[in-house]
Amino acid sequence: MGSGESHETLHCNRYLDNKGPPSLEHQAKNAVNGTHDSVQPHGQMTWVVLHRELPGYPDDNTLQISFIFKDGIQTVRHPHPGQPYSGVRICAYLPDNNDGKKVLKLLQKAFYQQLVFTVATNSEGQDEITTSTIPLKTQQDGGSRVGGYPDPEYLKTVKKLLKEKVIE
Image (tube, rainbow, N blue to C red; front, side):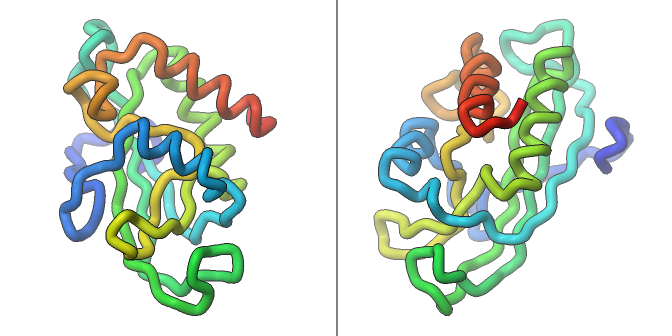
């Protein structure tokens, strides 16, 4: 994976316990609530090309990005240092076009600079890995309200947010 070509389809869930993805609104609230000061746990980022289109991008394939984090122990920059957090597998989607490939490269830079994810306490009091301040499209369809496509402003928004983090 990561080569840009694959004949296998990768299926993944937002969380290992099959919870749904946080909304873009929830992801933005994380930025407001200060979780952006936390450090991203160690993880892996890979991607494949799916030979199907996203709503709003009828002539393009789909880039499916997989983020995988193993179980770990929180650091001093997380909500409960020394306490465990559960691993997670998160999929995100981009159109396979020039803008989508540019965003993929920017997300790669941000991921390796530990800027995309963090550990935060959810509304149920459990610590979990979640996006930091960069929203991800974790659904292929359903519109921007549910973290999916179509969303004509998404790529511009992500590029702007990454540029604010000096990721260009």
